[in-house]
Image (cartoon, rainbow, N blue to C red; front, side, top):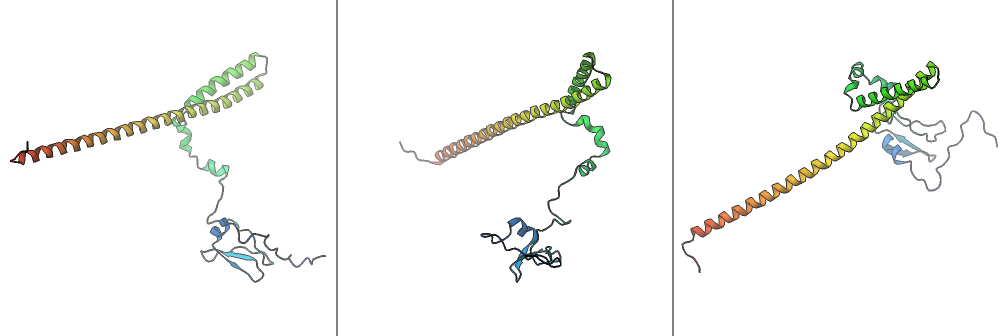
Length: 197
């Protein structure tokens, strides 16, 4: 059964058990309405931005508009966020110094060792640069892991100190209440002109 090329195919109905589009499309496009042929069209709650429709009246997946949506940043956009002054502040980044020092030492030893072992100069340089890059990354990650452990330990210490401080304050308040109650009791006894005994 052949179809004419100038007509678009008829819109398919929804699979059995499916009654509405997923929630993400409803929240993105707004309210939905049903056409005569049973296809669902969605309109944006803002007004002018209507959901795109196919020629046959079938529904089409909503596209992400320029005004919003889940656009992923690209690598070039990430590099654009780096300022020129940031290159002069690399030494202030935590663990950068340790990583570079480890990389320089390992790269020198690796390249020099490869040269002594009988490798040509370009190959020894490649080994040295590779050793520098890998060991810099490993040194930086190791330093970051140590810093994370130290931060977690410091957070635990601060939490324990705060808890002890709160307990001491509570004990001091209770002692002050007891002293106040004892002083009031002593005042009441002093005010009495009679005593039972």
